Length: 154
Image (cartoon, rainbow, N blue to C red; front, top):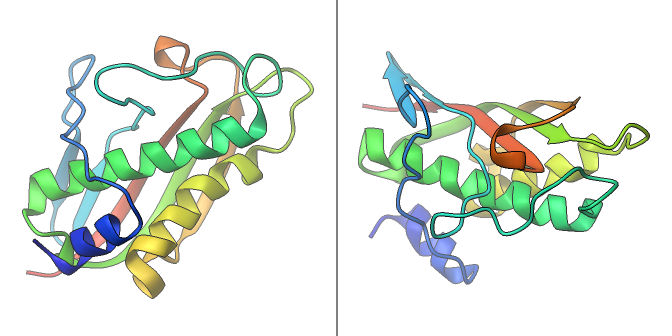
């Protein structure tokens, strides 16, 4: 097991299987030294534990936890391409989408769930640039979706 996977286990988490695509795309692709993930939903064992809009049916704290799940799913997608998460040089960019009630404006706090998880797992390699975007709706009525770009070494 890689040092990154050991760290995931130390945090009491398990790297999940790659979430199968729900349409015509790949969970992650590599181009040169970079791996780009598809948007990762907060799937846990084939379903989304909580659905709806953040600030209405879903609390900001629930959504933050779901964003961390998205990031963990993203790491699984990266591993499916590179084989060993210890090859990650750094997380370059994270983009998160939050299905938001009309008056909800705390998208950055929700996306901290993903950013904090990447920092806890990867340390300085997990520090990244980020965008947090509020949207009307996400696939499968997910409250949050996260994608990222990581630089990897050969």
